[in-house]
Length: 214
Image (cartoon, rainbow, N blue to C red; front, side):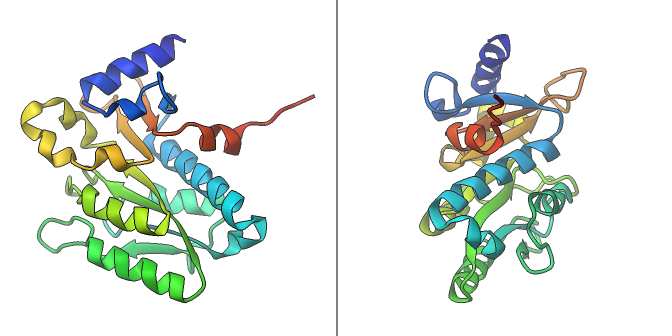
């Protein structure tokens, strides 16, 4: 209960929309790292896709992120059982801003659909590790909404800046994400590893990870 309350406080601190707070369908939960958060989001996306397409379709699931994303996104695909050689896409980025090209994302998704594959997950970045690049969330959200992808926002490095009113415009589109993560142990002065993962709808995560023992 204490964790739930404090996670709502942090949501207020970084200006997250109300959809990510515990009073509705969403809420926050502490993970050890942003890498774990990406994996949890991907497992939820996979579970949701299997509910829609059947378990037999899992071999056709595809995940996307930018070529500047942290290597943990690729590792999450490995752990979740996606063949990274054929079912994981590193989308090209702008050569000056290092932000994901949403037109390249759209082209990749549409090509995969034509090839009979099923796009299920996209990890956008708010502050990449190498260059602090901010992906264009509104445009990426458009692509995800059109094709039914789970949109996870890895804001591990840059998310703390959302508490600054003068930078709020950089976070436009956050309200359209399915999940969002910030590392409180970076710029929020938390003295131990604390990745704050927020979900717009916690039901897919609970369904994907719950085990009901006798």
